[in-house]
Length: 341
Ligand code: SF4
Image (cartoon, rainbow, N blue to C red; front, side, top):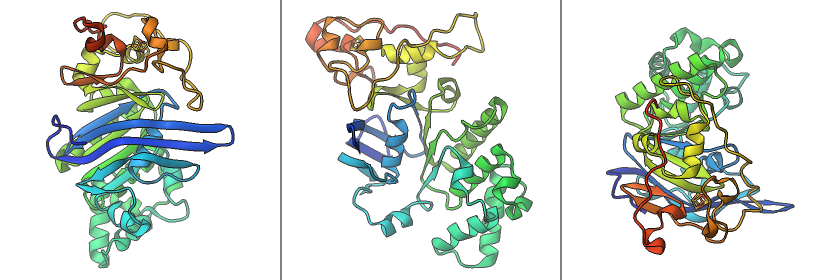
């Protein structure tokens, strides 16, 4: 599905559903998710743990392994379907056109190989054979992320957590890809290192115009860096819109709850409010709106009717408050935003 709001799409995800087949039942971790990412765009995906955001990333990157399986939908990268490609075809696309940076660089990097040897393996696997070219490109990408190329001789355990994550991002940049998929790449870092890594990712993205999909549970982190924001709840998109709009005027009660749950660095001090309860077990989804057991403004229809995604001034929101067709009423006012974000 092509989104008219996104010119020149690099990635088009349409009706994607992913299930985990478990002894205790089938858990649909991603349910009918559609979105598009434009060239050079930074899309943030947020939601609590277990909302399906990491599963979605793995499905987009075609990295799912049993018991997870894609049940329906398509993933098109630069016009070509990724679903159904052979491992060899996927390997040719990964790194060169589409890179993935996962949560823990310690798990992603090979502990018994130097950083330089791992860069060399990746370059050679994609046809770069000349030693001088390999050395030059490896040094260049390390410099791009602010690491002295002398560290090409270092092993992962000899680098700090922040440097390991930077080395992973450097590796993702070896071929200047069109899309970099990042799953909480800063979550293991302290706040200062997190911020500095985010600034660096944003600078690289603007300089080389690659698109980014960035998954996090941290609303404050993503607020300054993403162009659009997708909020996920219980495997579905609950809100999708321009980041500024979502922060200034969140429409979905869940988005509002997420925003109320992180501290403001500016403005008056207000007590933080958590969202009561916890996300549903994906093998036992509640009837009606999936958020209704936790929603502070739930009404009668919410426990029996599953809301669609309704368009509201260029944003999408999955909430019956916005079902103008059924209620015949005008759109409700947004519930308030965070001017500091
Ligand atoms: Fe809350 Fe009802 Fe909207 Fe769901 S549909 S978010 S329960 S108001």
